[in-house]
Structure formats: structure tokens, C-alpha cells
Image (cartoon, rainbow, N blue to C red):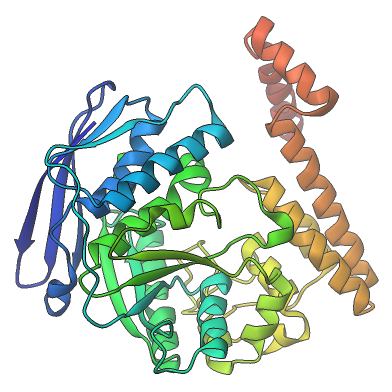
Length: 418
């Protein structure tokens, strides 16, 4: 893979940095990748390829590219970190995809941070990112260099910025509303960034398992004329860590000589995070976890999808005060309807903790329904990753019968439900 042709493009509405990706070992067409900010923030954008190199390196490995050649200089610390990250991802996910060689046509050159340290955080409005800010405010006085000053909000992280569907428009409207309100309450300067870095690979499984912290770190490096550190909020706590696209071992490898990348929050379970947010009224009012939509009510959350219900359950009695949710009442019937989603292991891990909190509050019926959800999630996870006797049957079916048994089973279920 070649990464080249860095350029700066300015209009009346935005300042953009862009580069081109060309594939060497994959039959894929070249792509222009870019990130842009409002004109007032144009000076924050760097004119080095380091930022784009982070995203490019992970995607290059995923598609079997033997090398990543950066047409320019590359930060030496970042080059070493990218090589280490690729080896880690190969160990975690597939030894058949070796780490690509990271090269730069003009060698390496250390970068210099801004004259005054300035800490940033990626802010989505979700529980993890709000907690990262709250925890930072609990630990550092405002004059401390580690005290967060900027909140980076991405358009293009969940939906591509060119997606003009009602759901995508509504999601971005809610994101802007939630993060703007919270940034004001937390004394943070919001930096809204549009980027198309998702176009390099649109597979959601790849994005979650390998790419999302790399994408965030790319944007952080592109802003390294302004920020000297970037915090990525942990989605998993220490008790539930696993190979994942954002991890306390992986994320810091995306640091450079001008920018430190931090992974924050693994020490606190989800219910602990919810408790901290519940104690901050402005944070509770800005909490946004829902990706459904469009929500015609004007609320930030539907209150009925698995992410919403999981968050309300973690909030406990405080959920009744969570005005950003359309619905806040939890019933056993509602829990039994929840989907185990794309990542059933995550549903099982998160709800296992919630089961105990229900029992501690004497909510035995909710606890039983949550246990059923955990059990369904474990079954779905075992099926997906071919564990147990059903997994063995699925492997044999796929290998020797071309998945004929699975297809027949699906047709039979379809007829029964018709």
C-alpha cells in the first residue's frame, strides 16, 4: 500500500487535509481519504502523513498488503508503534496476516508537540466517554496539563459523512446536541471533525475488532498542532478485557513524538461509571447511547434497544431521572425481547454485572430476565464462534456439506413463522 499526495484544501465552510491510498497487493481501487474542520480550527490540522498512516497500516494488514510505504517522512516513535500494533493484531486475530513492513520514502523525523500541552478526549455522548471526562475532572485541577481542554467529536465514526439517510442525519443531530451541551457543562472546547476514514473498509466486524481506536488515533494525529494528548475511553473494564479494536495495550502504540494516546477507564466497571454520571446532572441529561433512529420525539435515546436498556439498568434508580431517554421503565418482558446483537459476548459480560445489581436491590424478576439474556448471549456467542457440539456440527456442515444443513434449518424456521 502507498500513502501519498498529502494536500490541504480550503473552502468557505471547511479546511480539509487529504491524502491518497493506492493498493499494491489487493485488487482495490485507490481512495482519497480526508478529515476536515471548521475554518476557525484550520490551524489545528497538521500537514504530515502520520495521522493517515495509523488508519492505513491497520487496513493494509487486514487486506494482506506486504508493506505500507509513506511518501514522505514518518515519526520514528509512531513507525515503531505501528509495527508493534500490527504484530499484536496478528497474534490476536490471525497469524496468516503478518505485520506489513512500515516504510517512509524520506526516512523518519521526530515531531514537536504544541508549545503548551493541551489534552483532548474523544466524545461521543456515551457512558464511557462521559465517564472519562468526569474521572479526569475528579483527578486534575483545571490548570494541570493533563486536565482535558478539547472534546473531539467525529462525524463519520458511526455513519459515513456522505450518508444522507434519515437515520444518519438524526444520529448526527442528536450527537451534536448531546456533546455540545455536555462540553459546555464540562468546560470543554468542542472540535467537530468530519472524516471518511471508514471508507477504507466498511465491514462492521473489522471496525469493532481491529480498527476503531486506529481511526480515532488517526484523527488525533491530524490535530496534533493543537492537542498534545488524546484520551480514548475504555469500552471494557479490566475484568472483561479481551482482544479488541480499542485496548489498553493497543491504543498507546498509536502514540507519536508529538502526541500521546491514552486508553482510560478500565479500572471502573460499567455500573461504577453509571453511578458517577448519575451524580452529575448535566452529564445525565446529555447521555446518548442509542444508534437507532430516526427518533421523532426529539429525545437522545429510544429507551428500548439493548444499549439503551443496558444503560438504564446500570443507572438503577437514577434511571427515572434520565430525561434523555424516551422510556425509562424496565420490565422482565422488555429484557426478554432484547437482541444479543453483533457481539453476544459483550451482552453477556455487561449484563452479568447487572444481574448482581438487580439482586442486590431485591429486583428478582428483573434479575431472572437478565440471567436469561446472559444465557442467550452465551449460546449465540458459542454458535458464532463454533464452540460446543453445535459449533462442531456447524463446522462439519460448512466443510463437507457447504452449509446445506444451516440453510435447510433457516428455510424450515421461515416456513414455521410464516
